[in-house]
Amino acid sequence: MAETERERQLLRTIRELERANAGLAREVSRLTREMASFRAKLDRLLAENTALRDQLLGGGPRGTGVVGPNTPSSQVPPYLKSQPTRRPKRPGRRKGHKGVARPEPEQIDRTEAHQLQACPHCDGPVRPLRSRDGRIRVRVRYIEEVPERTPEVTEHQIHRYYCARCQRTVEPPVTAALPGARLGLMVVARTAVQHYLYGIPTAKDR
Image (tube, rainbow, N blue to C red; front, side, top):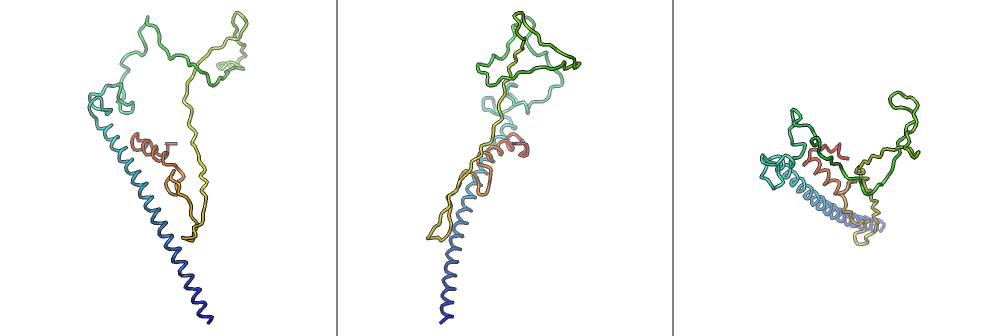
């Protein structure tokens, strides 16, 4: 009688393991299909970038956005131009012409004051220059800069559940990145464009 009860317990355990194994097999199959879909998308993006790079370097007619023998010099990217052997002419306008400069910015985001405690050439004492009304003379210089973008880190709080039918813990899928990856899809796509289209090593693409 004891042997029969033990055999029943073993059979129940075997059936539970078989159901769990079937659930794992279905999950592995789903993840495999999802991975194949992501890889297909990535391969398609890489192929498109390679085709664009080949067109850019291969030359083409004017007006198509492709560099060719008839492309004006102003439309050729700097990295495709040959280095000149000598400076063709003196830069700037001819004498007598009114100078042209970048207009002053309408908005000032930050102000920095640069002061001296000693002469930068001889390290001697200095005194501030003043105008006729007694104010300290200050030369203003505007510098416009593009701020460095800060990576956006998103914490995905994946809620966990228990499925009584599958008898296992389940989670909702996260589609913002490839399975197991910490870099998002936009980062992967941007890195592929920078590397395969512009030739930037992935180690330098921060």
